[in-house]
Image 1 (tube, rainbow, N blue to C red):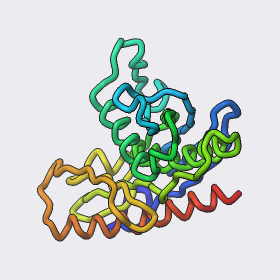
Image 2: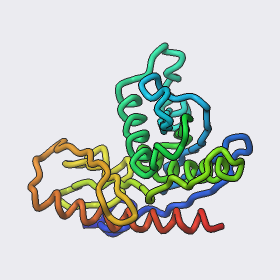
Image 3: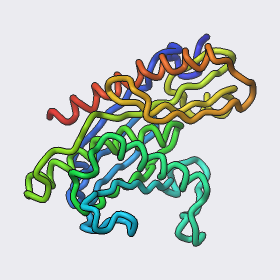
Length: 239
């Protein structure tokens, strides 16, 4: 199969992570995956949700937004509409769950780290880019808290990244972009650690059902993509 962008079926889009993109947040990352660009910033607040008060445990949460100019047709700001849409709520909950999985929350103290993911340009895989870039912003924020003496022990347990896999024209394709996603028979998102362990899987048969063998093949293809992304994270954090 020849993909519309010329990639092979198991080939990732070019990706780049730029740290310290803005100066005020504890962690700030520009995550680029092909033509998808997401700004991920991490901020810390000395408060936790009500159910965690007094338990000496921290929290990590995510917020997600598609900026009006991120797609070809302008979408209005959700703040102007007075409420967030179901897709936004679902994605930011995924971001929060994914990033909490890689941190020992009982070592954060009673503080909340918020990862804000603002999509500047969308071409598929925005939630995956948010998680992958959000991890780097989170690590930078935690390192700043350690440097300030707010945290005494590094609570990061492992890396986490995410990638999409789809079945397009009966072929399993890694890291699908929007041109492929809109015609995909199956659309999956895999969140994994740098050891290949699964954090979360989201998927649906949009045009045609898929088999367990295909699911396993998609998971293996996704793992190869996640390994590339976690290596990119390591390289970015080493500079």
